[in-house]
Image (cartoon, rainbow, N blue to C red; front, top):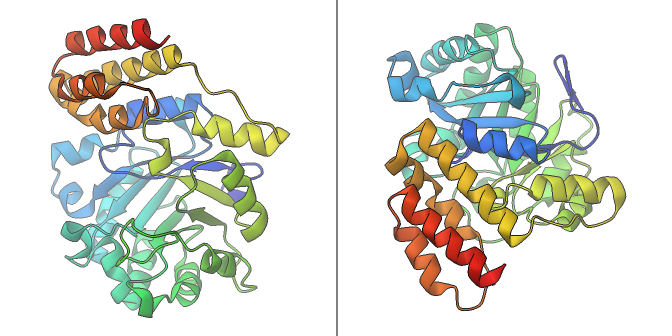
Length: 324
């Protein structure tokens, strides 16, 4: 798969953009486990053109994580074009437009997946952003607004014609949010549409190496995007790549190693934000790790209530003593 001057090789595995998740420390961790393509957290175009410092910080990228995409969202074509110019100064490999976020505070205001109710405006936004920058522009979207408007086949063609160089598709509608099972049938139809010539990236419910390979084989997508499944499990990229390349399962990190990985992420998140916010940021990762351990409820509660790295170190030592 190739976009612009970047050659990803065969069947790349992509880290999905996730707010409060895909910041530089987490991207660094996923990259170390073989993620082929990074996305930033999504960036508000309105806040970026207003020069909001917290938003500008999301543009931070490092050479080691390349190729990397800065994803922007909004509903005003001029603001998105202006934001794209600012984002380009951070020297990403690509700019991505978010047409898929389903949360009410974004989609309900006509941005993100809300734009699926106004496809001509989606086209205008892509054209404006493409004209504003000199690097490839991609987009991420969903199947449609609801069950009655799954117009992704038409939307995909129109975004491609407007200048998008790749399209990531989440196999749900906005109405579904993250419930139910992702429908990859329409993603496959987009990929196999003879009018489509840009890479198609599939997204939704990929949580095992076996499923990733099966869906690559069944639907023919160019790349696979991993979202929620990597929270608390950043090594899933290594698991998928190893299985695709060898047909064998990769042995995941031991419980002791997982504990060290989590601690390292917390330290880096604290350095990136501050100790309090770094720990709060990592709680969703903590909640996903160590599942299946017997009699773990007390330690999980303590871990999720901890407010300092010192408290967490004590809990991590208890985990190692009890289970390793």
